[in-house]
Length: 540
Image 1 (cartoon, rainbow, N blue to C red):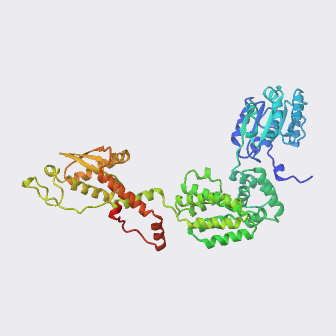
Image 2 (image 1 turned 180 degrees about the vertical axis):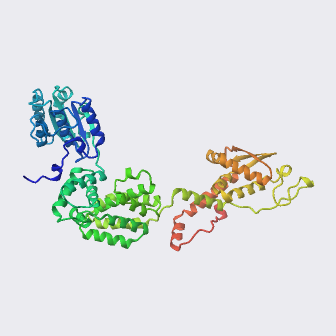
Image 3 (image 1 turned 90 degrees about the horizontal axis):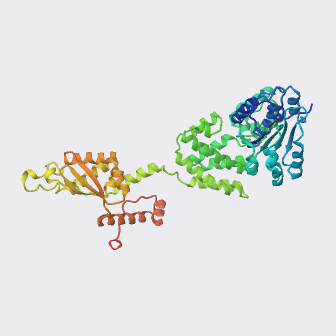
């Protein structure tokens, strides 16, 4: 008997044997059980996921001597003929080579004849999207209202190329890519039946190279079994299939995080010497950092990262001390270099330049940390007038206390400005961001237990101050300063006052000075820092 490749030898003969297509199988078995199988069915999905196999099983289920049944017997004449590919009532047509209108017209003329010895005459058209537009048009009427004994089963990898008039007449089932875990388990079962010893990790390596196609996985496994002499190890599998060692990908990522350019160049040189495709290396790195970012986010990892559990654990250890912002930055830069590496005549040099660009970029701070640092810096730059004890006004008892606090109630109106400065300083010690917003306010009225604040700015600043937690904090500080409970009302000013405008202009000039190219270059060259910014009086 001639040798059969694994993909043909272990082709599923029942719905239960189909791997990782549960929604499609459940729908078909329910349709058969309830006698609701459509006259035209379209199977769409990636290559090697079981579309033609399911079409054959469905043909068996409809024509089985015990059927229609969801579990064909595979022993009756019809089941045996379909398995052997010699059934007279089941026609398998290649849409790529039978795509003319004349061939479809011939099919249309033959559908009126009854099946020879089965319940249905079934047409399985593979790669149906390859039919010409006139061929599709010739099929329209027959497809919409075929004879009762006719079933059409279509399979395609590109459903977008099928006219909408055909799609609307078919019941569509979408096949998905087979997961690495499911593919690995299936190949392990086949290896046990073939008495071939190979580790599950190596099977996972084979599965990862197939892009979700079971047929491709079995073809690669067939190659490994044929080339190997006894049990195989990781190195043999990678050499046979020309796969880059996954540990090298992890080592490159670690070197990028630590800034070790020498280690990266050594790994690239080793990969180049082994004859691996460096464009494929770039794609693997890009995918690896995508997985690292998802692992760092830590949500729904098994669903979003289709990798073995031991690799996910290794990724979690690799990103334990790395921020998500850094990983995102590397991922973005690698993606930007993709076209440069892909179309370069010297991909090795392009890869090395991409790595150098990565190492030159300093890790970015997370946005929340950056905002916190800016708020703290702004709070430190706010002017702090020297604290002074107000003079005791004439009248004795009407004056303020002697411990330096502003006078209460009767003398408060006189020292409201200095009291407000003290309030801002108290808030700035623990809440610099809130103090920055308070600097845009000025107290306009103090009456008994009530202070009215006027905000010189837009509605955003007023909204920050009026937040329940912030307003309660300000009232609490005011109460400690005035030694009794204070209630605050916030109003907005239509236009900022002159002092505020001058302050804003000064801050704008300071910002422009700090961001000037000469200043930034000087800071970088001399590793310096800005102590203070002063302007010439004429510049003001």
